[in-house]
Amino acid sequence: MLRPAISQIATKNESYYSVVIAVAKRAREIADDLYNNNETLEEKPVKTAVEEFAGRKYSFIEDPSLRESKD
Image (cartoon, rainbow, N blue to C red):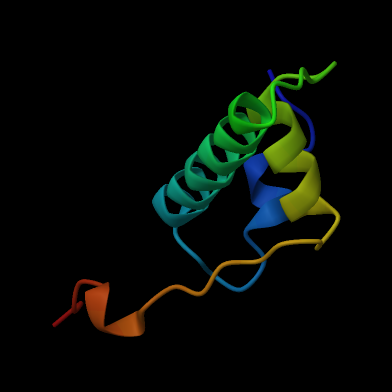
C-alpha cells in the first residue's frame, strides 16, 4: 500500500476517484518522460506521483459540474 493515504491527498471534499485519476495521469507523464529520455527511475512512477501530490508539488482541479446532484 502506498503512503500517504488517499484521504491525506484529497483535502477539500474531492472524490477519491478524481485523486486516483490525477495520480494515474501524472504517473503516465513521468513514465513517458523517462522513456523519451532513455532514463530510469529508482521509484515506481505511481509512487513518485503520489508523493508529488502529497507534497503539494502538483494539484488537481475537480470540475464541480461533474458531481452528481443529491436532490
